[in-house]
Length: 153
Image 1 (cartoon, rainbow, N blue to C red):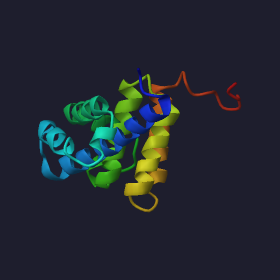
Image 2: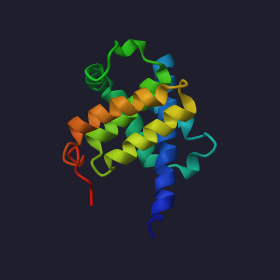
Image 3: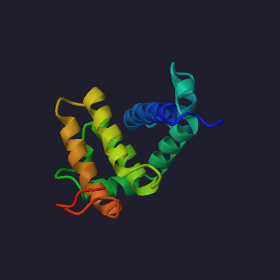
Image 4: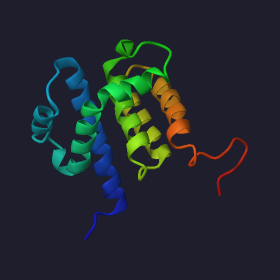
């Protein structure tokens, strides 16, 4: 039996949180995705996460970091290296999901990223994350976003 949608949603949210934390650590230590995966698999609460989604986020972002950072650089008003590591990790996860996970609605991607930034980032970092991912969504998910002035049914 498949997990109930609300439980599956919570499991993915937890996977995003763990991936953000692992990516934060990756930025600071340079550990490999495999080392981080093994470390986080022993963390409290990991059993409640969607382990496959966590591994996908972690490996896809670390493997594609250069391309994601290049994309990120075109969306922000400062060099990527000047980003707060928490916000950088949140943005990397969000950009990966917007570009590579069409099964996740863009509003969910942005909402999850903003919530992570509110909880773990700098005071107003969530506003920055929201603005950047909104710009990215208009590029990656233009077909999902209603035209200005049109109300979605």
